Image (cartoon, rainbow, N blue to C red):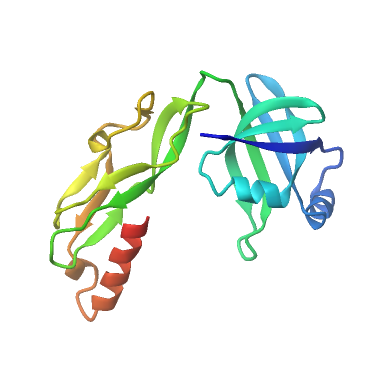
Length: 200
């Protein structure tokens, strides 16, 4: 995974009023923590940060007034209506260090005929991976699966150096009969749900 370089500034004002002023300036309040050090409060450029966060678990080379740290996003707060970034927590990492993250699950393949639905029990898979080599996603094949079938964590092939951080028998997704979800007039809803599952 490539590093994204972002320059940040130390945050000297706190409270809701200061946070609002920061966001009006197109910046995002954040905190950097980890490795037993005291948290460092920063502001980051909003547009650059938003672009970086399009990649799950993006590795950021954060320059805070001349001091560089490798960090990954751990908690992102967004406005529930407008969608803009309100705050971000960033975890310090080191090269070679293992970190616990959740990686998106991408579904591939076609279900067996019958109009069944994919139910995502886990939208993201908890794993431990080397901080500078976090997979962007994992693929799960549902080719030929029918109602009652499921995929568990141990069925998923992980990249080298990445291990599960969840029980091996944890169900990631399962196939359910469409009529069980929508017994009357649910054809369109079933198709929409199936489509959404395929794109996840």
